[in-house]
Amino acid sequence: MFEKGKTGTPSYREITRAHRPHHFFRNGLVLIALGLFATAAALAVVKPPEPPALYQATQTLLLPAPQPLASGTSEQPYISETEIRRGDTLAALLQRLQIDEPGLQSFLVRNKNARAIYKLYPGRTVQAALDADGRMVWLRYNHGDGEKDGKYLARWLEIRPDNGGYVAEERSEVAATQVHVAEGQINSSLFGATDAAGIPDSVTMQMTDILGSKVDFLRDLRRGDRFRVVYESYAYQGQEVGAGRILALEFENKDKVYEAVWFAPDGGNGSYYDFNGHSLKGAFLRNAIKFTRISSTFGMRKHPIRGSWRQHKGVDYAAPTGTPIHATADGVVSFIGKQRGYGNVIVLKHWGDYSTLYGHQSRFAKGLRKGDKVSQGDIIGYVGATGWATGPHLHYEFRIDGKQVDPLSVDLPVARTLDPHQMQAFETMVARYRDHIDLVARGDSETTRLASR
Image (cartoon, one colour):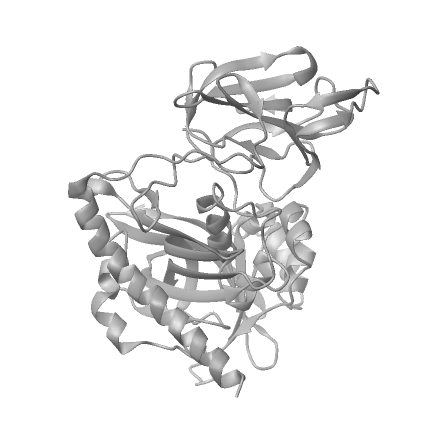
């Protein structure tokens, strides 16, 4: 198994949305449907220490009330969060969090216990708590998580003011599992809609991964598209410390409804299925690069190097050198190496007569060799400009029985369905998720009706 893609880079943010304003959450109003508590525990994939609470998010991220300040006053801090971006500086990070504390930046750079935050790994999150006067209560760098004895373990570096200076401490704790139900509408971009619904970026990225074989998130989104999602999150002492897996998802795109639900047949490895039990994992992703742009489509074009009109038998995706390239389906590496105009190229053999080609790579995933098995979404290489290329891009081909076809228009194949024994357990679980998604849909319809009066 090869490295999975990271949860966020500046390239997709710049393409999909403008920089969002900073959000603060203070004593978020929790809308709890009493009838959902009875089934909330069954929604967790990994059994938490206590049955998870179920929250319904519409316009605001709904958090449990924060813990009192260290001073013991009843005043609650303002909690803000930002994600580290590629090229970020510590000063830019603190500015986004609206932190202006004398000597803090110097402390973070020089103190040996605080240097973890100075590495600024893209995709990780930093949270800050400010009091009513704008003074920092604490700064938390969430730099690790995992499972321990079947429980979610949160790890973070916490910096607090201390007698005119600062103190840094590594902390870890078993987090409580919550299940959120949220919905949103596309007005400008996917990330803009999920921001408005209070959905974490990591959950948004999962949405694109799960439905990547059904929806082309570069070209297919339309104003008015809607989505509803059930997902896990983890909290410690009333503060959210991480987002977990999507449990169920419904996405309305161009008058079509796409569904997904997480299911582990017979307690084995889990994957996503539609609500009828058809696996989504075995289908092909529409794109091998997350959030890029198409620079050349399938069909006749003027060759950028030779100048003559020729048939272009693939799709080109423009992206910076080094952008990760993902396998669009499970397969086996049938060729890896240099090949004339393709430059550094990988060919994957999938089931049946299907194969895919990934050309002009700058380098391949470390350790990848001919005959290796890869899973859908695995990083197999990185964008480059090797071979006959005028600039960095991925040349992607989708082949059926060795013949190139247009991957943007062909009906992509789907995978097997569950057997009757597995379907019985699956349908029982899906019924619960349908109830929660229907609840959000009914609530949204009622809000629309009242607004139109």
